[in-house]
Image 1 (tube, rainbow, N blue to C red):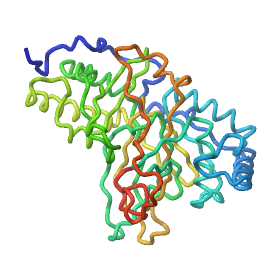
Image 2 (image 1 turned 120 degrees about the vertical axis):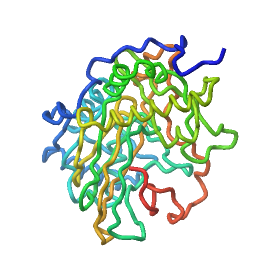
Image 3 (image 1 turned 90 degrees about the vertical axis):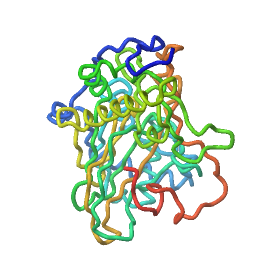
Image 4 (image 1 turned 30 degrees about the horizontal axis):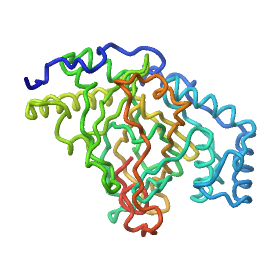
Length: 365
């Protein structure tokens, strides 16, 4: 008999509310600063010295190691940040990267160097780019840019280093996946089971030869008191329906209701946290437990003053990733290892680069 949207799925764990540090609400978090690391004068000196050391050793972005980017004191703060990402609320804001390290070349070295203390870089594009410039070089200056909805990225960790903010707007929005899950469970228990079923996600970029056009993954898997959520409406829309449903029309309708509820819940003032990233702010996010979005914005006319962030994707090592360690055999999440590189040798013109990772109009954050 074909499954209907209300049919229980015995393949999934019972839908129960999440508790613990991964469950938080924006208004409560906004009144605290325990998720923020303010870099001291000594930390800033260490960063300058580390950049100088990396350059002196000729360390490329792909070959930079912890030894190439020594941070004797800041390393301890980064260890605590890693614990907050893996076991706490799932996000940390490092504030105070020096202005003299926010030039494009210096910022790349800083972001890559700090990333070495948290995980290993994974590609964001099919040609293997591990750092992406998030900026708008559209032909119409001053044109308002629409908001981007809540989603997760295809990596364990996301890093965003702000080089310049927009003229107005462009806030980064965060939401607890646990809070969103619990709200869905409370408001629509008939839809909650669909969070644990496999949904079809369209590939983010052109896949490697032989790769399937879609990957099947649950929206949520459980790991004790921490969720692992995967969600991107743009990719789900192309996939059309839940992977295991035999009633496509009913599945599409139920899935649309579920996706709408996820997004309205994450965007609600009671759940979301709004951040105005300023130059020198480095936001670190665990994509398993936190969704992110961006508010609408208006930018400056002059290209050199426009909003500009540098983005990094990281994967945790399997032996240090709690989501891999504690996942049961029936609920192991699909690994988040970025985009499969299909062209890492042939140079690609920046004018043909993917939006958000080169000189094309910004659409990705």
